Image (cartoon, rainbow, N blue to C red):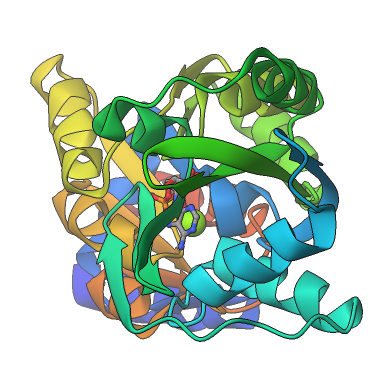
Length: 293
Ligand code: ADP
Ligand code: MG
């Protein structure tokens, strides 16, 4: 009887916006203790926009933005796309870098007119052992308190500008988290973004626990850590960085509009990109188990 129930559930799930890639997930979902959400692109839309630029040492704002966009020229990261769009909207001509290198979970590096230029978040500054000037530090802490992501422009070992980017929380995220709590399921958030941004988003959405500044290669160890404490864990994500965590989780759930790698690593795909469908999955799994008894 079990396979038939699962087959029926799989088609029911499909009618409710879920593509079930691994049918065992339908069985596992009812037993979940905690759902871990990736932040960018999962709880938020992942549509970043530049809201402010701050410079130090008399560096021109447009020049700083143009250089930042040029260094980001080769990156597919949402931050890179937002910065290129902002430079384009301001009609800025971009210098031409000679080499690009992505620094996973931190930022990018390029050579421009013989200078080494980096663009990245607070953890890039730490890795480069660069201290931002007080004006930039103040700008960053204000932006962080407003849940804005900040990246720095570092020229020859000196932070000369900072760019603040705002993302939009998916309104459905709030309802999803509330409903999960009603089902007695814990909720956590996992992000590569800064402590400031993570705290602001978690408190806005009513999330119990968050892990910030998690490097891509450490996302799956966070899942393993929760499992070693006896928890059954679902991971919901969209990015290339989320793939190992999706595989590690008891139930891996990908946002449909996410990267191919995330979708291929997931047990269930949320076709409508709606985090509330995670709740639907658990309810469906619980309801069918009751019927089987
Ligand atoms: P998330 O888990 O939020 O999707 P990532 O692991 O992709 O984040 O990135 C973590 C952090 O690394 C970003 O918040 C940013 O500070 C920095 N970063 C990564 N890639 C870039 C890039 N191309 N340009 C600037 N900063 C970047
Ligand atoms: Mg993401």
